[in-house]
Amino acid sequence: MLRFDTFDNESAYALGCFMVQRAKELSLDVALSIRSSDGAVLFQYLCDTATALNDNWLRRKANTVIKMGASSLRGTYTLESNGETIEDNGLSKTDYALCGGGFPVRLKGTEHVIGAVCCSNMYHIADHEFVVDRLREYLNCPEAPSYPYTKPC
Image 1 (spheres, rainbow, N blue to C red):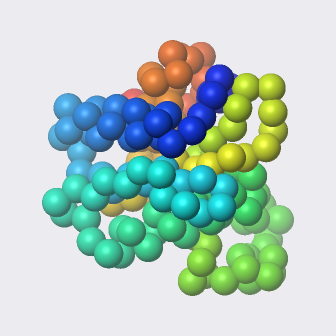
Image 2: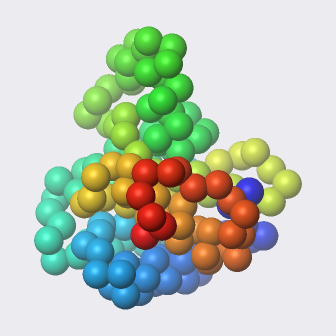
């Protein structure tokens, strides 16, 4: 449901700025990254409490989204329910992360993942919620489901 009509570098910038502004309004310290499917960083923001560790988490979450074609949280639950690990799938924990906080960018009418929106610096499920809640707002899609962990961020 959370799909874009069009998405390019300018779209990534506009979305990223929107997400940073909302994080500030909500007093949330977040690290954000929007990447293309080839891994190029289209937008990135690190709050003052973020570190290089968050940058690495953002990269790994984006890799997971792009490789699995789903949110990093869904990928985590899929592998866990199958009793599998990252390594069972020929991937490395150095480059992929089984946790929430990464979400695919898709265009309406397609299944192809063209990028990833990622958040770090909170509990991984809160990272996921932040991304989904912001996409619901940005894309004006309130009917999109939200992970029921906490109140909307």
